Image (cartoon, rainbow, N blue to C red; front, side, top):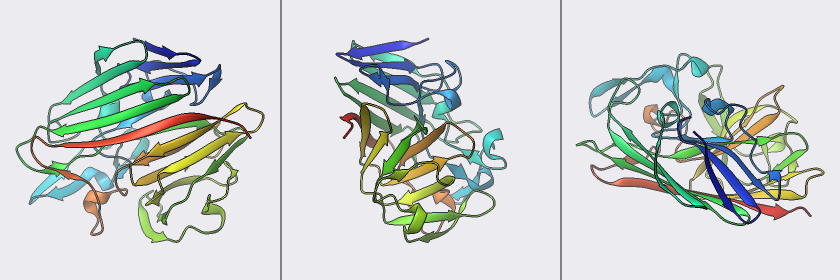
Length: 282
């Protein structure tokens, strides 16, 4: 199933059954996110939702209110669990107009996440923009960890990236953070620099909420704005893409003394917004 949105020169496809993913978004014929190479695999999509948590939870285990929580590890992150559960399930289309759609996922407690919640993605297409309003409501009878981010992919060929952040998380051999350091040297993107000069799979903490991407030889660049406090930069070696992921909390936050995982009371919601806007290349 593909849901098409359009407004002026802007066109977006959504893949509700593939984890509520974005299939593509283009402006004046230029793809602003990478185009999905599969209509059924979120990992091959343009972007997919991260709910109720982002990145890895160490060994899929943590303690909550005196209870030992054990989650299913995922093959792409063994022995850890990763990226929540929203991307693993189909989403319902609850509203659809020419330039607007709402996708909804209702989670029942299971081995991947032990508390029920309801998640919504609201997609609003502008002539040169795509806005995602994200909402997750706690349906459990206790306060629980609950957040919502997104995992967009971008073409890396000729790409430069610019953003600022307060901290950079160094990873250990298990792909989990071991320390947080200053943003210096080749990890510093305060001035635009080419993507792909070195690999990354690191969290930037307290980023300043706006990033820009430009591509050599393309008419349009991209502005990313979000109220989510952190961003994961993923630049794998030997691939044609990179990811800049606005997220709500530090990696493995539920297991860290300095964790900042949002905690949501029964019946209350976590909400966030991400806006992508096309920019004329300078």
